[in-house]
Length: 249
Image (cartoon, rainbow, N blue to C red; front, side, top):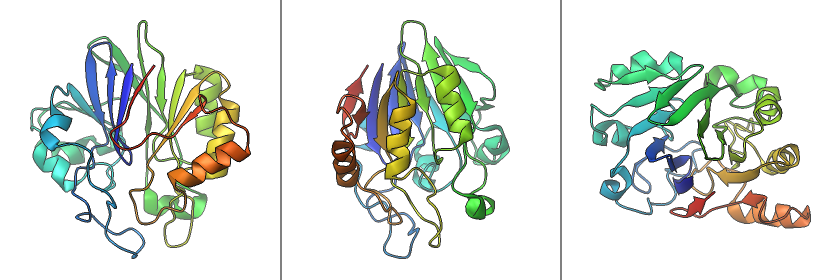
């Protein structure tokens, strides 16, 4: 399995000869929304051209419809015949964008030799959930490949802990920027939550993404690397990739 971090939450996962694009946020630097009022996001540009990014993609996974996970550029640039696999509550809205092959993942579906199912999470503490809405993660597996748990836009919560304990995925991808909404949050994991996820995943490599790209973040790559070093966490257990970097498992 290979995981290429594109930017923020956007990944390309290659598993069992299937290429999956997760949560495409394709706006150029500064051409998206500001989430805190400090300035427009994304804060950085894509590390590759859209043509390179979209080449050979077999399906797109969409965890929820926030603008930094499935933006207007992605909605415009993706072929309307591209399979879009999503959380059930979002199916009709995505189909209304003109996509002809929109499927709710639910408890399990297959793309070639890859099996995908959704997982639950919480997009922040109780006081922001009405604003944030429902989100999902993905559990992705294939014969002869490590199981990938892409937790999505969630804090560390009982739903995430249950997946870690019951499914024992070998690779766990979490969002670690500690973003705030109107001063409340975090909306996704912050530094201590990331470190606790590593401790709860003794069997796994934890990969941290959704960093250094949105204006409402409170945690950076540098912060996480410093915190991991101070906590004596082995560098092989916690990976903090740069945009465009490819990780192989």
